[in-house]
Length: 113
Image (cartoon, rainbow, N blue to C red):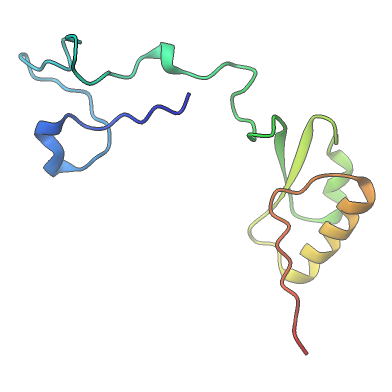
């Protein structure tokens, strides 16, 4: 569940990130009815869905074409590492198409002549 928790409105000037209210009289800390919810363990995602891409596949980071051999195409998908240049990126995308592996970030810059 993607529930967004924000800081209690009284302390908005300090930013919008969640911080646990610590005041003795704070209504959110006391979990009173009609007040903002506080995060707790029950809001977590299922273990089977955790750390996975929305497609349901787990991600493997690939930095060279040989790394694609470790990817199981039924359970995993590939993400090209951010430090990979255009030349090697083209090779990885071409090899992945041959093997039938889905790539999450296949942006290839084509040089114009």
